Length: 337
Image (cartoon, rainbow, N blue to C red):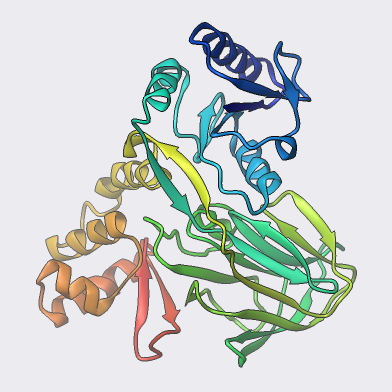
């Protein structure tokens, strides 16, 4: 059984109607989101257990659908009727992809989610990110960041964002956090406009993150940039969820990583035009592979340590890459585009 959901704009609804018409034609069982004016068995997602979800619209719809699923791990095909990084299909391939789903000729790509516990241990899941802010504009929050029961730092900032690799391209990136490609087992913790000059920390996704001593005017916790919950306690615990988001995938061409890589590579030639070959190579490796330590760059490029160090200094000087603390080994840094 399929579950069909959609944004309510004209383009998204037209695609959803086309999909439903085709599902009827091939005698496939389906249900339609109750909010849609489309002929079919009207259901809420929590009333059924479909084999696959077809979601028509943008990233906000896809994020909401995964939140609505809760602990259930049901594969989803996002069809972009507007700009979307998370969509795995477009209008041109839609019907052909439905045929492939019918024949079980697809892969499932799992993206990690995170869950926050606060307000008497209530749990809230997110695929992209979880942020803590003051609800009053231009107000700071004071907090302590603890990692695996050890205090990492105290800070005053405009806010704090914990992002998954998927969410690293969103709000975290606009706050100068790194883009994390290819779903490694890490999370990023990015302070926003830190008074104490704290920068992004890259941590294992097995870490237990505890933000304590939160002091702000009307603090709020925001999941995926959409769900806002007033914070009544003075702490928020964040960890990796046991339940991944499952994306139906046919081609890596539609993967968020490849979309970003293509954009990065198209810009890299212009940005690195006057750099030496070694720096261009290091930049390209970081563009394709994501965040790496200096040692990992040396192993991948086979360049001497001194050459890699000089290349990194050039790229940092031109603000083409970032350098962040690597908490698993304080002697190393992590570099990324």
